[in-house]
Amino acid sequence: MTASSDHLARRIRFEGPVSVAEFMADALYHPTHGYYMTRDPLGSGGDFTTAPEISQMFGELIGAWCTERWQAIGLPERIHMIELGPGRGTLMADVLRAASVEPEFRRALAVHLVEISPVLRDVQRATLSGETIQFDSIHWHAGLETLPMGPSLIVANEFFDALPIRQFEKTSAGWCERLVTVERENFRFTLSPPLPAHEIPLLSGIRDTAESGAIAEVRPAAAAAAAQIAAQIARFGGSALFIDYGHHLSGTGDTLQSLSEHATTGVLCDPGAADLTAHVDFDAIERSVSADVDVHGPVTQGVFLRRLGIEVRAEALARNTSAAKANDIAKAGRRLVENDQMGSLFKVMALTSRDQSVPPGFDAAQ
Ligand code: SAH
Image 1 (cartoon, rainbow, N blue to C red):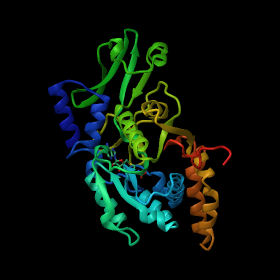
Image 2: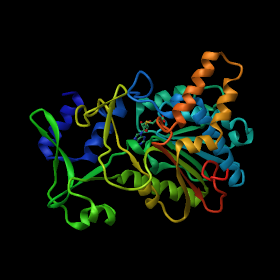
Image 3: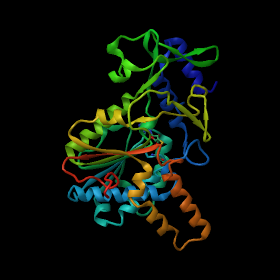
Image 4: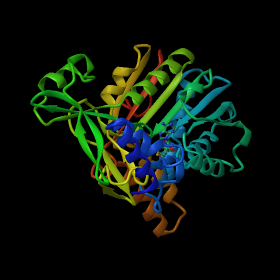
């Protein structure tokens, strides 16, 4: 066992089985052993790659989207550009470069990064210390509790999928929570006793009709984060953009997965040493936001980026470059939008404060 799993095994032996959410939280966020706390997991040398790491076009188009939403709320002189889980800072760097096309917008921006990992904060600082960025105007936050007051543009790419999920399994005796225990030196799943109806946090349609053996997931931290973001936007004005892999409608299915060096591994094999994520339930996110904001989408990432003009952007970038580079740009663009790559598994949802037009990417007529 690794140092992290050893610590978790001792905790389980001492306290008893933990929920999948507790297992994930410990594996990902433990201050000294947690996966995100100890490394930069992104890119070809890491465990997984994300859209902004694949192509600068992703962040540039989101920067243009943010510029348009700033205009949609009347060009406020100050606006907070907030990113949740900024990874290496690549998306924010591309957003800020695109924002510079509209100098008044660029000057209006105060940048806030919500990042739990000290290692990634350092990487973000290095990425964003470019000459176009006023270094002292970037603020880091450990969580959403300290979000600044004022109009806000909030972007989260592959943030929600990292938040812990709880899993429930339907058995012949009723719904049980899936727990993790230790047997000899290995982690394995076990089940809680059947839960009384009021302790099953599932939609009644799923709770009452799922077949025996079905697994259903909920993500309390995502619901709380989405509710807080919606409240921020409703109160101060602005927009949020959530991009993640997942599904449009709540349902059943075990989507917990573990990635190490770009390959899937057993979800309980190496807590703290491998990435652990699960599909985002966009339906559940929508249900957790108040009626004081408008919800747009989700639409697939492929549809969203095409409507934002990724093909035109790819052609512009490919001009005046070598044939090999032009080929790389086209290939990266296809990876983001094609249905058999990231185009349909990834979805995009926007929240906007009241009385805004439909944002770019969400209106079929655009
Ligand atoms: N958005 C980036 C990185 C995605 S990986 C990209 O697209 O490349 C997930 C990111 O969220 C990492 O930066 C991770 O450290 C951060 N993160 C995960 N859980 C978090 C939490 N609970 N609070 C704050 N940041 C978190």
